[in-house]
Length: 287
Image (cartoon, rainbow, N blue to C red; front, top):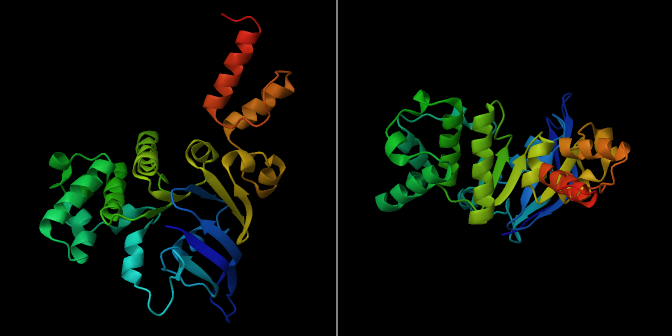
């Protein structure tokens, strides 16, 4: 399943004194199985862009196609689109409303008209995907859970729709380190083991360095960088100019090179840096 954005623009409050161009001539192709990190400063257009991907917002101009079909075409089934492209808003736990975890997660599948056996299968699978034990949590109120658990319930409600593309807007915002790690582990599993296409908005260069297969950098409503993590993080001056910087491992590598260590100049993950330092140490006579 591929998605193509062609010359997409979006203007808020068009024709008024508050008119604001949020997206400016966006051209992208999102390929099946990618893990895309969408990064940029607050107000650069990231959240506006992801809300276009499942039709919540309509471009002021330009087109968005899913497998060659315009998602805003007259014959397009919006309901089917939102089953294929699941969108998890920032702080999705604010949208929980049912009296039990099971009922909240099953809300979407029930609206699809599925039979009870299929609904039960999807709920159990979604809870397994977000690392929540069905027997322990299914009949509990979601409002009695921790913040991280509530967020996982909300994400499970989207996963129960079995989307081919999962869009996450800052999924770890406001979580403690343990809750953050659980969410990121879950997203990694969905991508690597399930083949789900992931598009994740994030401010953490360290997180996306180890997870993403592609990074799209936005600034002032435009795409200014697009490539693999290695390609994007190699553009250090451009990243600094935008104000995003590079991962901590890449900065440490720069500092060590400045001190005379013969390290490659394109390392950006802790694992890569550790391996390079270990090889260098052995070459110098280490045990």
